[in-house]
Image (cartoon, rainbow, N blue to C red; front, side, top):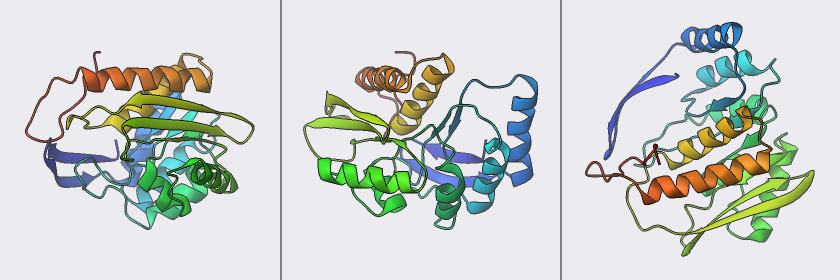
Length: 223
């Protein structure tokens, strides 16, 4: 845990960051005792915490899913600009797969991948940073179909499409997707299979969301 947040479905009203010592200590305690079959990284908040996480996971060979969380669903900034460089230099090369949405892709590599050419260019830019497999999430596009594309500089791309669901209950879709992918990798699934299963899980979780709150409510995580 990198931070404690005060939030509801309408937004984040306060964030209390953990110290880098506590963050690194949590990771090392888990890895040195029970161990892990996969690691998922989400909100990092600032450069110091990003560095602490990089220190803790950098020497492991455990499959790692990096979700570069920059902004919450409600629009709150969750990563300071200075932390982008740490993320790019120390965590992107370590990741098994990176899962940016369209704005996050633009922030990381300067390319907004809204078409096939943009996807190719962005994938090459990520590869230059050491991230060879990237899942570009298309939820921020405006089309009737949501298109997620898993690129791999060493192999073919995987395209996943689903009808856009018109709902405001999408709190944590990106976090849920990246966590589900990590769960699949932990079970020994190939990356493509883990992404396919995670994509289907999230679509169903949105479709069956309980409708809590006045804002962006949570998904149905028990779907």
